[in-house]
Image 1 (cartoon, rainbow, N blue to C red):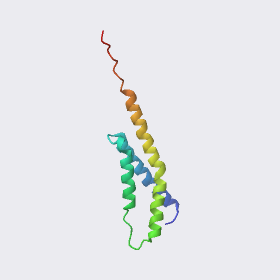
Image 2: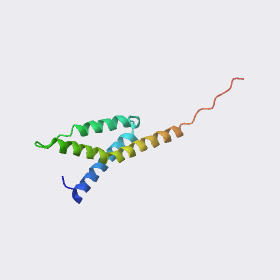
Image 3: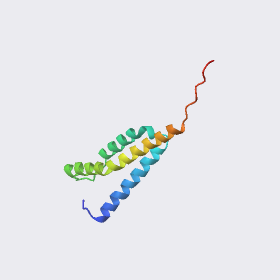
Amino acid sequence: MSDSSEDNVTQLALLNLIRLLAAELVAGEHRDDVDRVVRSMEQKLNETPLPRGTDVNDARAGIARAKELLRPYVKHVRDQARAARIEEQATVTPRPLKHLQ
């Protein structure tokens, strides 16, 4: 695999797409399942279909590099989910307690 500008742009575009898809999940009802989404992404990376004849060491290095590239995006998605939960909790105002007299 070469480190050409085209390859770099391709990687960034795909990572951005993954970030956007994960953010969509987080923004919706799945925001409490960020770890589940991350585990699923990692599992799918480990299950990446490889072309016949791919060297095992190259495959391991490629998957490791993909995980390394995803790390900041995963952190961003986790931060987004945390911020959404905090914002949601802030909008829920507790009811005042009525004292018995």
